[in-house]
Length: 72
Image (cartoon, rainbow, N blue to C red; front, side):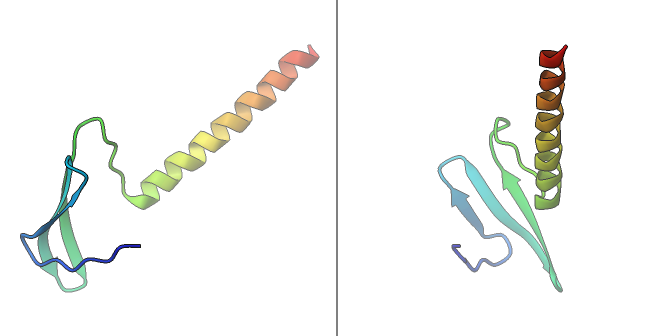
């Protein structure tokens, strides 16, 4: 893990197309802005994990369904 220190209005570049900018620091909360191409999906980690879980579930349902079709 790379750990960087930034102050308000400073930013971090990821590659040449993604910028992470510190917008505000309020107590223990930090507000960030993300500038990225529309083709790059940006999610909070808990949303990303939920999407991944749903995708895994959909894959298992699909394979079970295919197995049932083979038996028919």
